[in-house]
Image (cartoon, rainbow, N blue to C red; front, side, top):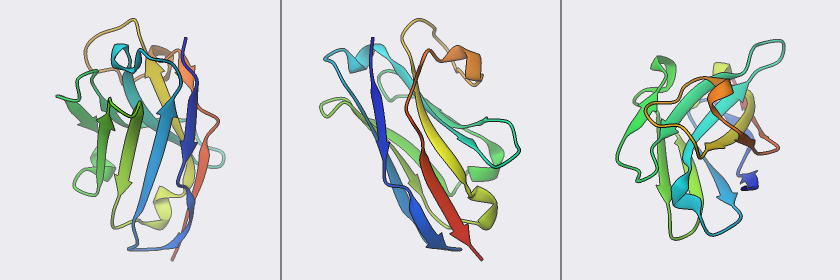
Length: 125
């Protein structure tokens, strides 16, 4: 089992950057594929980006390609989401998620067993 804690959210202006961090407890971080999801008010939670256990493969939704970068540092048990050129439509609660059982590109909410508490990102125009 793993516990996930996000940090790094905040209020920024359009065009600014933020870096989210998600730190996992335990000593088996490399067993978990990781992802970032987000949920805007009155909308479904959606995948933003995923990264494999080794960090060798990543996936992004089209709306963030070229602006967001997911990465992980397995020595620090941490996954990051670097968000550049932020837009008001990026406003949401961002959640870190982890899965230790499945393989491949995991983009569904149900693919992930472990979740952080979320961190608010607000982008003003």
